[in-house]
Length: 409
Image (tube, rainbow, N blue to C red; front, top):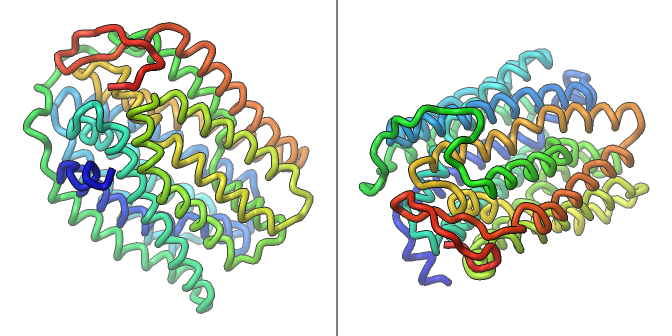
């Protein structure tokens, strides 16, 4: 496997380094936002749900928009660079936020940057490797992304231990953000990228096979139970975890995902994407059940959150690789746009529902409903989505039939 990893194109490695620096900045800030809202701005779970739901939903709409334009212009780099730049500029400005609506605006800008870059970046990754290496490429990218997500919370933990004010910590996110912009500017698009497409965009997913549409529907159900991860950190704090350990707990999640993303995603190249995704969704459901039913045993948070990292490692790369397996090559950017839209647009109702249930009926019901959505989605993925042979596009955009349980690619 190490030889295969080292043999991946420079574009894959460069995109991984960009994500490493970007996530170092993003995850330095991410676990501190709930603390900032609760301790400085005196806002509760419902406000957190509004902020994260609106920000992530907007990001998802832009992911579809940028994916369609990437196909039509046959260009991905401009969207990648622009998206990382917008996020890098917005994050340090949180230091000057004096009310939660200002936090909403800045989180909106941060997530808008993510929306502009994600689908073109995913299409660029898929175009840069052979179909039999898609899981490996996406797994390596996710591993480096999660490496940044380890560095960020560890930095946050150290700065909090030194009693640095939250506003000063926010300002430090400008440094890795600038590095991400510089590296993104060095990206070269593959010479094999498709010519500009003039296919009219349609909201009915015209041109995509039925199995891809079923996959999106089940993904929407899963995401309905997958609200903002900030609720997990809020739950950990409620169960008695000290403030300075909250970023450290999130670093554990990212460390686990970093270590296992590449081998598990590469495994999907041989065993099939469905098995990895199915296993990950079941782990997610069990994690939410146990976290919601935890009666105050703070020590259980550490093995539980490590399990959550395994869920991320098993699914993040495999879910994206499956998109490239199922979508026509000429519509790859649009396909990732639809995937990212589906995975993100449901975060608004999911976060609002989760925050509302928590505030009205308590965390046990909120976490229980989320777990139910995940387990039902896992059943539908196995018995409905892949019930017939999957349609796999080849490089010429001609469709051919392959058994759904055979290794993709």
